[in-house]
Amino acid sequence: MKRMLAILLMLTLAVSLHAQDGIYGSFTLGQKIVDLSPLNDRLQASAPGGLGLDVEFHNNYWLLGGEGHIILAKHFVIGGKGMAMWNEEKPKGTSDQTIKIVGGLGVGSVGYAFLAGEDKQVRLIPQVGVGVSSFLIQNKFNFQGDQSQFNNAFVDDRRSALTKAGLAIDFCLMFDWYISVIELLKIIPGLNFGPLIHADAGYTIVPGNTEWVRDFNDPGNDLKPDLSFAGFYFNVGIGIGLSSSRQEKKK
Image (cartoon, rainbow, N blue to C red; front, side, top):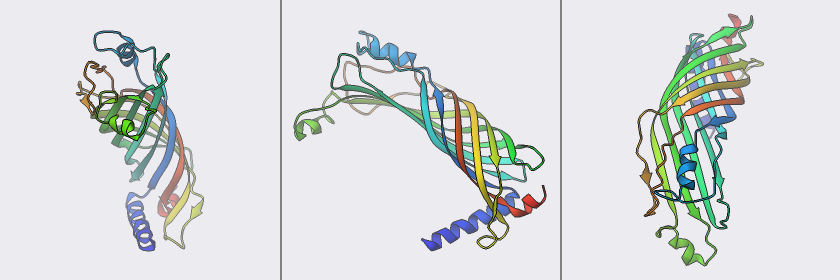
């Protein structure tokens, strides 16, 4: 464990000194706006291809995720992030049926950091990223019988799921506020440590009509709405940064 930590610290130092700025990362919480009206239409329709259910998904969802980025030569940014959303709704008038949706996004991005303030603690970073998005819809029943009946849920027609994955293009404006508060001279010479406050807002495009893939058999219910992770989002987060002491002294 100590050897792995030492290797990680050495790599961090090498990248930071080369970058002349640092490495930053944060955990994020936010909101995602997804148009789920196609799904609601399919669920509520009695025919054809619908389930005839009294259920409706709203369009705003909590996002949970994280991001990290490296700033090279004061301005050039290389980073990545991941976000996930989920929800479950139980149709009215049913006791054992649940419709579940899960969406996710993972992208690598590049950007340019505009610095503000005399101490360069505030950064505005427009970014563009490319990655993968996925969406899952699951129609499941909660079984109340014995164990054999539960096991049968994976081979009969009462449990079904559709997944959809494909290319995603992400446009984002990121805000960072970083304060270097501790110089880690005794651990890694030339490296500073400090808290990071992060926020970002953007829009995700999912081009093309990606095919749905069925995980379980469910004949008679062709639930294939035109649905994806595309849409607006915003996040706020808190994290840490490791910055080069040489860069700090050049402010």
